[in-house]
Length: 476
Image (cartoon, rainbow, N blue to C red; front, side):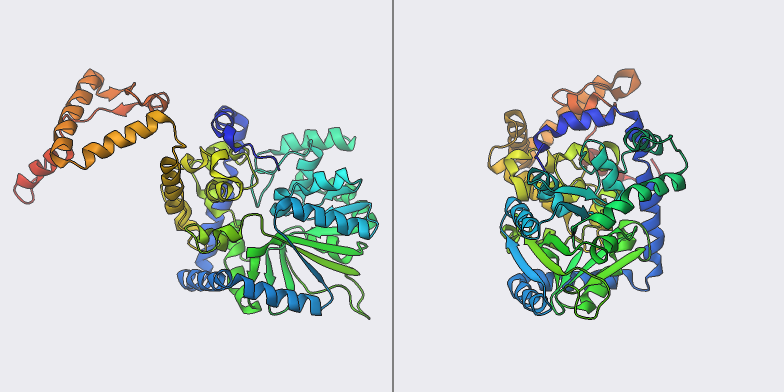
């Protein structure tokens, strides 16, 4: 997927002006946010479960090479082939090579964000292989000129029923439907022949299990099963190397958190645990099974300041609750991963120079950290990225000058006190009789959209001193 993160400000401005999008994004708070709040109450010890999940995820990450070696041994012993790709491009080449080896003409896919990193559909099409998305949301985006997803769990959350109804009528050449049940039935009727005629099934992997050489796949539509147990003779799993878990017990712990944090469900509708290709005497499953495990910058995070990001379980809770994402949607971020987690991962994977605005795309309110099921300190990581930008002179000159000027005063308390006394009195005068300021010097980006209440003309220290001099129990 082509990186467009350098255009974040322009893209965000367009989305803010899109009233239809603003209405559609309200689904995040009415469905996912309230659903999560209810679902976590079902756990007897939510915080204890989170702590256990963190311990299990970090145990795998801190010994990643060991657990990947165990996984490879067990998966190979059960008949699968394990391949490693240093980059996303390498991973796409491997999948194309597998397809050519088995004379594949059509590949059906379930939802996979790693395949978006790989630009896999484009690579398959360039090799003469037809990719068909089978997740309903991803299918909608594919037939809409291969539009990228805007959310890692609900890829088409930015569209409403009417838009999809128009799209189906145009592409399927059938009468326009508006009933959701009828629309989904129409999509099933279109996709069913694709399931039955495909040569290869491609899935992501929510987790891979070292002790059994298995892959765990979670969906709400059952399309992952159609991609792996029906006619496709080849099943290819593409996933990141960090998705390994040591044991099935670890998987059980993490799965208590994933659906609750993602969609507010106690458990997803479909959960598949797949181990190896079809064995002698078995009735279904592929003849050949491959795992393509992608690095794509992940090992560069191990042992560093951003290692905590590797324990992300891709639930999307951070973006569901983020006040910035809720207003601008996922396409503004310009790459595969949007929201707070994307604002950290994208600079890590594609480079800070191409993502200058993403670390700034946050209020640092801390909500993403609060709701993250594995407690990734996203606000702290965003601050670290901002520090790196400042150290490498990647922020605008006026911004760096302003911060250095503030630091100069902040390190000199007496001078800072004098400057703030002058500043608050000047702001009080600027407020006038309305007691609000509509234009702030050097702060046009903030005051262009809002007014600031004028201060009283006294600094915090002055107000605090006055409060302290009052008799106990008196009110000002």
